[in-house]
Image (cartoon, one colour):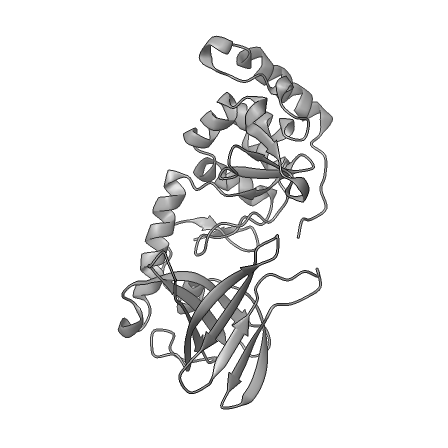
Length: 285
């Protein structure tokens, strides 16, 4: 869900506009005049073209999701720190050189650049960044390898971390991994009871699939085994006050677990090599 938006301070906007226009009208260099861009896009484009972490962080609706196990960016303070990692030369170049004809309005989804693989904007603010910088790719690969290597050896080969959640009442931990096959991808749900060794065998393991439904592509995971046990999980909720649940039916007995996102490596106590913003916005070491 998109959070309530706020307007970029007029003074900062005016200063940045003058700065960018003064150095951005050189058509010979392929630099786009920000004044030619759609009004909703302009504050974001100016922030990136002027390479201002502060202006960009003010033109974002939080949180900004990054692919797990990269950490989401919860607020403007974290974005200022993370800006050099996410907004690299490739993203700056495409924003700087893209004419207004490459910015497209996609109905309720707002505005996007080119084919939608870069950024998404609504009411003048970025609400999604689909682009992954080279540094983020490196961090993502490193964290995935670190996380999978912490599992029981039998669960490692050929699997990629997808997400991790914790039961808000009892502290049980669930993780979902996928195999690396692009077509007909298989997903695996592993559950660990509170206080058990996370590097050991899980107390629950089921295999299944992911379905995307509706115009928003809401995710629906379904898992089962040969004994008739099964589980359902929908991480995307419609109502703001809803809490996602994992429903597990084991030996005919259903049980629901209210869960929230977490990071596996936080629970196994491994030393973190890569510094990233934490859930609460404070630097995670």
